[in-house]
Image 1 (cartoon, rainbow, N blue to C red):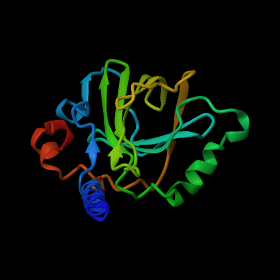
Image 2 (tube, one colour):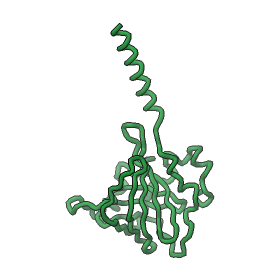
Image 3 (cartoon, helix red, strand yellow):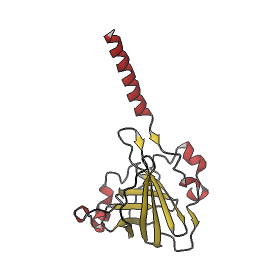
Image 4 (cartoon, rainbow, N blue to C red):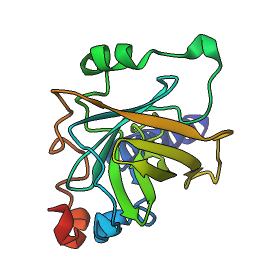
Length: 198
């Protein structure tokens, strides 16, 4: 009898492990910016997209694309103490050796409305076969400066931002491939993609 129960347990465990390897939970219900225009209402000079935006302490960095994609290189928009700072020139010099630079992970969309920018993006698929959905909101100061003033994690309801995060634009000759994104060819994404994002 004990052997039968052990056998059942092993079968259930194998089934659950195989399911977790097959199915990945992604919070698609809140990932909706791709259905909207990249720019809803903006009269200023367009944000530069031929480079990278890096925070003053170098721990937050992302690339923007004309089609509304955003690639997060460093997700640390919360303030870090001085010992964790990176020089922005070091970030640009070494960005292409970052292990997520060419990966399909850490991608999302952005939207601009008046002088506000919203970034929504997924983190890397983790051990539990789940990608968390993050949202950052910021103010566009000019075509090369953004201040992130809020963050939110949809899966947990958490926020880690304890101060505003200023990011400045640095031109670069290389950027991650925006066709190499885990969701870009998914049916749910292609079907509802706004014309301005094609």
